[in-house]
Image (cartoon, rainbow, N blue to C red; front, side, top):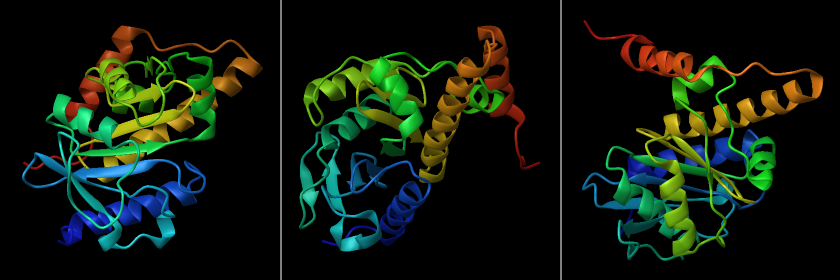
Length: 218
């Protein structure tokens, strides 16, 4: 069985983007998109370079983590993706990266506050850190879902970041904004005393973004 063409192409293009933007090295990280029936998703295979991916390489998995179709082994983080999709029905896409600046926070096991307005707009509050568990385990999946809560992103201790969204473009943007925020916060700490956005201001920015940002149909 071949995966749906539009979802497959979107994953492949997103994979190229995460590599070209420096969010991953080699074959690390993984990408998935929920399929139209809502109880299954398409995910990248384990250990295949992003620029070599073809639609036939992607693997279909149900939200219980069982492989439905595909000739290759799915990503080792399939349990994590399945757990997020089970917990958050509104999430359609997941991008998991190992970007360098945010990995500093993952290694220090410190949450990343919304230091930039764009972080507050897109993410709401701070990006929390999931309790450590080995990659690919059910324990990591449970810890990630717990720390993610109702947020858009979560840090995996000593590992990387998981970004979510209604589309792959949004999930990728979440990862990019988290990485930018981590870089800015680290440099700000080295060069001065960063001012953090108060919780109420972050909430206001998030609400305003959801209600009025961009073009709205009349």
